Image (cartoon, rainbow, N blue to C red; front, top):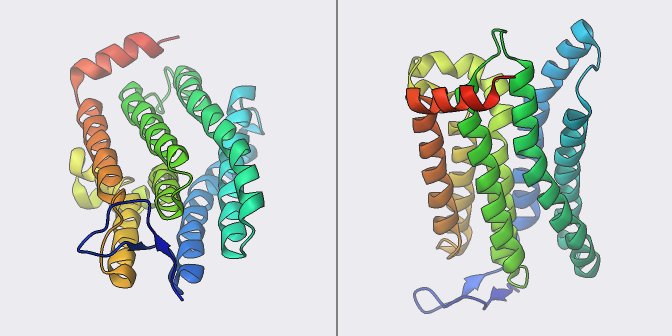
Length: 255
């Protein structure tokens, strides 16, 4: 028997189907893809840094890594709790998740500034990249905030949390897929997009395709969330290639 999410107006005369028998495989599959992107992108970088410099990261970077890893662990646990029917514990942990999301939104920009200033005068100095880092956090805050407001609408809440976290995988994809794909698009904005942002976008599209295949329609929150993220993504890339933004970011980040 299917369960219906009646929290939104019906589309084409029928409410959105909240649960489908394939969700037990598909939703954990999206979470596994998130883990794969993050681990594949960050573990080699961390290992190389440890080999050459030890774990000499600033404390704020360790806190940032702990918060973001905690978010992925919590997301995995929350999905498991829903799939096993333990909704009460899922809701209690959601309070911690809201606090953790707030910490991430603060830590993200702070770490961006700290690491950028540490890279000053080295080949890693790239002040324009601040546009990507700031819009990533703005997008995450907006979608997660909306998901929390819609926490009583399970189908909407689940999709928004997934979309918000999928958007963060650009940091992982950019570290390992960018090496292979960046050259395909050249050195301009298209190459930049292909090297790190295309992959999470494809995962978001896959989520929409999954709903079309299993429900015959998209959830009402899907297109507004995804289009908003893509708009912020486009703004970030345009700023990255803007000399005016680079000059501003250089002034802001110069030690």
